Image (tube, rainbow, N blue to C red):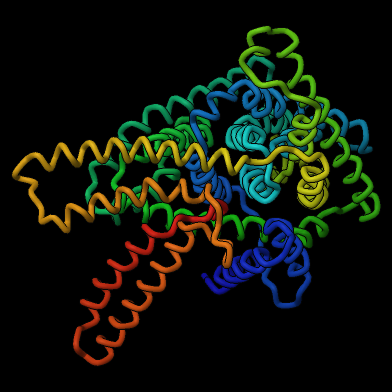
Amino acid sequence: MDALPLVALVAASAATAGLARRTPLPAPLLLVAVGLIGSYVPGVPTYTLDAHIVLPLLLPPLLYTAAVDSSYLDLRANLRPVALLSVGYVLFATVAVGWLAYRLVPDLPLTAALVLGAVIAPPDAVTAAAIARRAGLPARVTTILQGESLVNDATAITAYKVALAAAVGEGVSWGGGVREFLLASVGGVGVGLLLMVPLHWLRTHLREPLLQNTLSLLIPFVAYAAAERVHASGVLAVVVVALYLGHRSWQVDFATRLQEAAVWKMVAFVLESVVFALIGLQLPFVLKGLGTYSVTEAFGYAALVFLAVVAVRFVWVYPATYLPRWLSRRIREREPGTDWTSPLIVGWAGMRGVVSLAIAFSIPPVTSDGAAFPARNLVLFLTFTTVIGTLVVQGLTLPLLVRALKLPGRDRQAETLAEAQAQSEASTAAEARLEDLLTDERNSLPQPLTDRLRTVLERRRNAVWERLGAGNPVTGESADDTYRRLAGEMIEAEREVFVRLRDERRIDDEMMRTLLRRLDLEEAAAYREDADG
């Protein structure tokens, strides 16, 4: 098999995503645009989405990296709105969008329309996370959108299987559909619950970071495959395992955490870039298969279906936001008040993505009696245009809408104050532990080393408070920023000496790498990671 097209796709996608960081455009939109243009460039290979590749090979790691970085406590606190969107909305959208498509598009059978509804019902996890980061959404809204997108694929895939069974003539009843949904959801959660504890135990008992990170890369595929093996939801199994492991990541040693963060950041970057580029590259394929429908007719139907998708989400979001509050005093007392702006953002943030396209491409070409699947190519086209439409229209305007509504973003000052208070409590505990240890003669140290331990501790205690203080009148830097900049300059001076000594053959390469690694660890300790990664 020629690997060059795959290498070219990854390289071009990564380069485009890197370029997007220097433009005001969100990376998903630029990647889709480049994919659309590239699909008509002579010599570019044909890349067709295959559900047998996307669902078991691309979806698990993307879900895993999104879920492991999510907050289990925040998701639990927002369980009701997340469940109403990830389950209730997807089922409602499947039926509502399917029925509207049946009424709006001539010659589209109801069963095929319901398949279309299930395919385009779920907003995309990757898209939601990418756009939310760029738009600067309030923390609670971001949590709800991310929680929705983590679970809704399981609901949509189950609804798709039920609708597809009816469309191909296999026979399905409401009772059978409910049973399949319960099997998929309860089974997926059950598999995740069974796997999460032994996988966490294995992670904490492996002593080699390379082995631990190899296991980390395998976990989403193991969870997904195990659940699918018993006809349960692999999506839910991956999410349950990832939430548990993310919640207990502090129990893994520091070397593994550092290496794992870098590995998964790279994996997520590559996969997200490739996924969005692949969406754009599907245009020639879906246009070529329209058959009896003209391009003008197809785009007219696409506009109607897109409007239906947008409208149906608002029809669900506002009642789902306010009805529980009107019906339950406990909810009104427990949850903060919500005005009309947050539901507006949640309703407008329904971008679709690669999962919808992958499911659509898995629609069989023929039914159980050997006849062609009704309007299959049109369903593919409408799925594609809905994905592109939500990415472009909603993805481009969402940041503008957030700014126009003047929604309160993250309170950086309050977050820094909370960080400083937490660090102060931790430093006090560490100081007490140090004094207790030093009373034992087995822990005796020369005074300079004891002073160094206290200095490092005091430095950590003061660093966050210094960010709250006044900046340098000349540079505008806080004392902490200046400290880190000067530490970096000193480390760079040491690094240059080590390289020079290696070049002069006074030390060998192995010794130089050992010395440079020590400097790298010190530099990593001195510099805190930017919030946006």
